[in-house]
Structure formats: structure tokens, C-alpha cells
Amino acid sequence: MSGAADGSGATTWIAFLRAVNVGGRVVRMERLRELFGELGLTGVGSYIQSGNVFFRGAADLDRAELTGRLERHLEQALGFPVPVLLRTADEVAAVLAAEPFAGVEVTPEVRLNVVFLSEPLPADLALPAASAKGDLEVVAATPGEAFVVWRIVNGRPPGNTDGVFGKQWRGHGTSRFLHTLEKILAAARKGAR
Image 1 (spheres, rainbow, N blue to C red):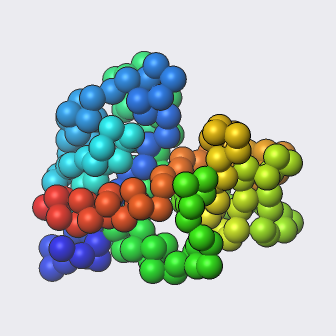
Image 2 (image 1 turned 120 degrees about the vertical axis):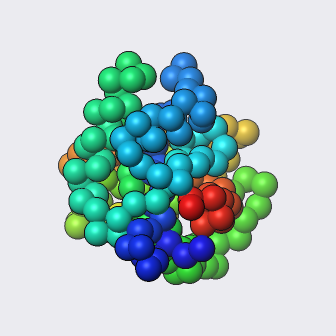
């Protein structure tokens, strides 16, 4: 199944949820699927426990309006804010097809991450941009995504990307490992019917 609109005018959407099942914010995926269904979304499914929910919806839905509805509904039901970043399956496929990490060698100390952004990074952020410790490097960006190389230093994962994005950036983001993003896309295309 494609992420593009089919004959019914529906497309596969993926909601990437920030801060789910981290820091004591435990939510079963079954409960998340129920909450999405309560808003009339169909073909709702999920992939692993990190807040990846997919569903079928109109190709021309108002993304900002649905994002707001989802965030309000989730906060009301769960008792804490859950930022939502919506993408179509085709948009995620385009991110993967662009091969944003071409030439980056993956080693046991290197991880490739796509950070979905609520707003573009500052226009004056020169890329590549690295953290002071060298554990994070933004190698490329689009208006909706930042492509970040994580480096494990002294056995420790890197810190937050906000310091690399710049102080003037006021958005929020949620990251997925590149290999996990491929699996999320496959699950969404198979499962959202």
C-alpha cells in the first residue's frame, strides 16, 4: 500500500509522538491506538513502544488542525503534553530515499537519527553543525527534518540536540534512528488499511 492518496482519497499518515514511554510517561500502544480511534481516525496501528502511530486519513486533511486536536486529546486523556509531528508515508519515504547520511560510516559508536521538526531550523544555522563535545552533528536539514549523527563518547549517548539547533530555535522535535524509521514506514504501509 502506498502512502499516496488512493481511489478513496485517503492516505497513510504517521504520527511521531514526542516523550512517550520515557521519563515516567508510560503509555501502552493499545491505549494510544484507542485514543486515535476516538477521534474518528481509521486503520490505526502502531510500531514499537516509542510513540509511532499510523492511520488512514484524507490526503488533503488540515495537518495543523489535526495535530492540535491530537495534542489536546492526548494531553486530556494522559495527563501530560504529547507533541505530535505528522507526516505522510510518502513524505517519510522521500526522507529515506534522499539518503541524507550518504558517506557516513556506521560503527558501534555512530548512530544515524532523523529528527522530525515542528518548525524549520534557523536559516543562519551553518551546516554541518556539531555540539561542543562532538557527540552530535547535524549534517543536513529540510524544513521538516534534521539529520543528526550521534557519536557515543566514553560509552555515553549524546545529549539533547537543542544546543546544536541554536538558541533562537523555538520548535520541538522527536528523533528516530534511521533503521527504525525504515521499519516504521514498512509497518505503516502494511498496517494502515
